[in-house]
Amino acid sequence: MFDINTLLRQNIKNLTPYSSARDEFKGEASVFLDANENAFGSPLDTAYNRYPDPMQHAIKLRLKEIKGLPVRNIFVGNGSDEAIDILFRSFCNPGVDNVIIVPPTYGMYQVSANINDVQTKKVLLTDEYQLNLEGIAEAIDTHTKLIFICSPNNPTGNSINREDIETLLANFNGIVVVDEAYINFSRQKSFIQELTEYANLVVMQTLSKAWGLAGLRVGMAFASEEIIVVMNRVKPPYNVNEASQQLALQALQNVTQVNDWIKETLIQRDKLVLALKEMDFVLDIYPSDANFVLVKTTNATGIYNYLVDKGIIVRNRTNVELCEGCLRITIGTPEENNTLIETLQQYK
Image 1 (cartoon, one colour):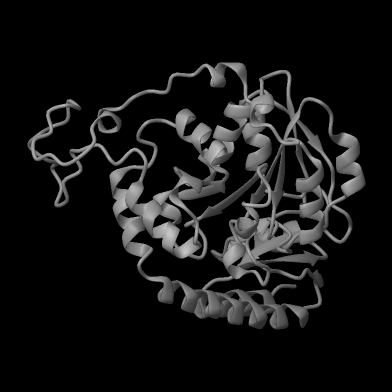
Image 2: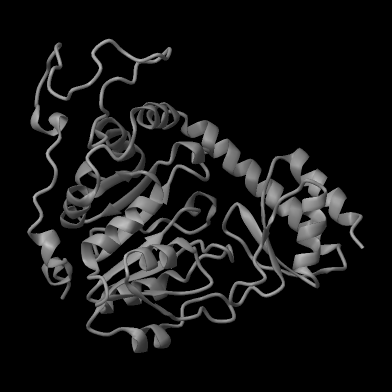
């Protein structure tokens, strides 16, 4: 039976969170003399002299409409990386607890674990890039607090079998984190719909990919109210700046534009895959539910360096476990994709 109190660090249980000036004030006002801000404005066209909403209420209300979730189940952070770090700091005792990651996967899980002095147990994906449930079960011990699963997975691009994730959720007494950074490009439905079924589920999403706001650093986590309460207590008081909040809210009104970009990205992905299949140095192209493809080649490093010399940057993943010889290629605009294809056709 999942019990958040058995997972929380004792110092987090005892934590009195920082109370900001904006947290203490409720209601309407016209004169703000509480936060030691510059009352005269900013040397910019837009005034940013006031601290932002510490709980991002306007964004959460819009996300409530889009995601169909209550505000109490939504966390907004400075990118998904902040949500990852907060989960470590909330639930993992440094030097004592451990988490499970399933390489090849997103590298920040390991980095955040290292920063927080938390052991990572690696259970490699299968040759089909799916979960090794037996290996995960063997790796779990009394100090295992978190399991991170990226689906669609980075760098492989495939979605993880839903039934396997549900098996972990039903049998693991810790927290299962499903990172859905690329879910907008996937045929699978989001795990957000399962939040009422699993108290130990955290779903992460982002505005950096399909929404095109990577420069603003706005990430989201969806979970039970008790987990969200903990995350809000641990986060910095003004973790998402005012400019990012305003622009993100503006972008969240443009769902139609984003959906059009998603459709075009999938069309371009299929075109790129067809072109790559005709190239002699391409050994395999793995199925993708993301806005990138993982391509196995005869000489990943040589091709990568060739493209760099031509001013084209892809990601060399040949040193990643189970991705030997592979390049990860993001789907660009039609013009960018054509440039890539024409350049690769000249590679010898």
